[in-house]
Length: 259
Image (cartoon, rainbow, N blue to C red):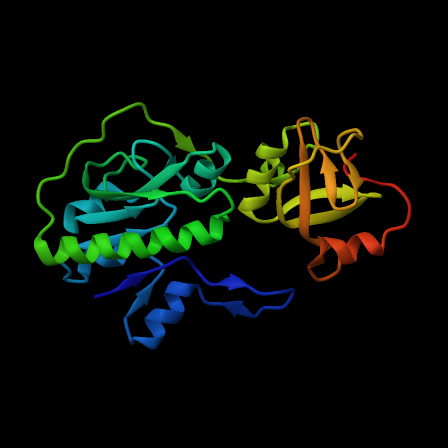
């Protein structure tokens, strides 16, 4: 057995590095660890399990060690790097987990098992990912116990889940409140106030719509292109997260968010 993970990341400004989550667990369980996927060829394993690896695995490796992938979407919807986030941004009411055969293509392999998971309208990407990880673990354990069987080719029009960039997390207050709420649910959503970045940590769609222009804060509700977004938790630049009520008490006069 061998575990494969990304190289350790540098922490802070010094030379200190931090192990990945896989690296920490492998160390605790005394599992050999490598950052080179080619090392699995000599591991003597019968099957590899891939979860959020983020790289295409080459055919020469798969020829030696067949692999299955726990993918957090209902393939062929949301192939790629950010399936959970893209499902939330699209407003998908249901997503799920697929246990699929690993091919050299981008999430193109046939599917052994799948399960559907309803998406809560207030659920964050982190919370949904945790639930999908639990479902994926159950799928995998059941498949290993009962046998993989024959996979079914993916059917339908593929959609692609591009990596989430900082621009995707920018809150454009001219957009509808429902869309902005989905962005906030991804984590690290941001706007600006007086040239400084303000993170919107938690928010919900307001039942009342403020009368001001988009970006104007009335109480704890921000005007948008359609409806209002109620701020719950914010994080001003250089400070810790705080309730929107406390933040608002510390800001004098009219507050307009965004450029």
